[in-house]
Length: 387
Ligand code: EPS
Image (tube, rainbow, N blue to C red; front, side, top):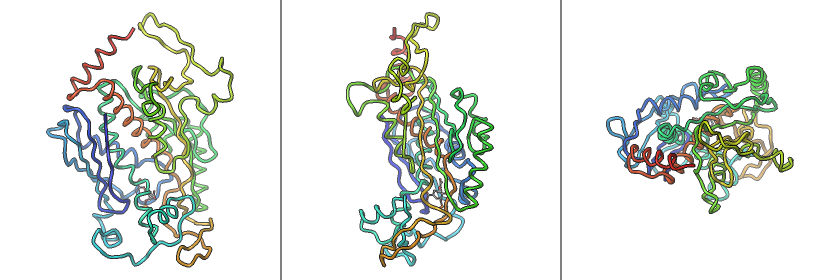
């Protein structure tokens, strides 16, 4: 099974991630990580930081001559702002000292106030630096490793934006991997061209008013074999693991697997996926995929898909919601922090990452193996045993 830990603050020197449990022999290049990180920076509506942030990647440990050693893989992602200027050096210094500008007017909807109360801080920066979605860069670096592992098991993952603000894309076919380049080329990572134009205007309108927007992303995993996850215990159910992983993404407020909430209003006869035997392929198939590729906490072998809802970002470029100054207890508006209008397109890449980490971990649990070759052999033996 895969374990990983991220560390680092949004405006600190760097983020780091350590991934443990990968088999030996998995090919990885620094460029693979850089390419995924560049995809995460995509998206209309991101703030000024994404224009200059370069995500300086260093493979620190666990990789030699372009492949994993089976030891923990450590990756550092430097913040270019730290390197280019000393703007944050004193403010984020680990040396003893204190800030000259404590942030005492917490932003409604952010972790600021609850975090300050919980940890006994008088400065919201002690909370927001870690609550920030910058941390997802470290996750995406880890996700690159998970995706690389899954590619050797013929599993591939994509995401696309299906809603930004009130604009909803017309539901269409679930995209195939061949559509991903076109989705990534869209400024809002949307497969529906009409909706894309409306989403761009929605973002421009919100930006003009200093407001923010949320939205919904769909993640699709192709090629997931039957049998990942389990029905036997609550914490081994694949849908439960996916829900936790996706819900842990900053600003996410809802996750549904397959038809999710919609299925609750249907009759059973219209809610499930009929099973048939595909004699040509020699396998069981479902004639629909309302379950999203998971039945009873176990992957069914159908395409796995989930939808993830993100709230509008709590940092507003024109703060209007009332808050309280924690020093004076007087009503005010929150402090102003540089921010994005929306990060929904980027969230899709993070959602792919979280799905990849869960599927890689469950694949390792199911098939095991110290080397990539052994893992693939074990998987092949299992697939050959299915009838
Ligand atoms: C973020 C606020 C913005 C975003 C940041 C997440 O950063 P800043 O306050 O430095 O302008 O750009 O996202 C990233 C840096 C990133 O790499 O995704 C926040 O408050 O969550």
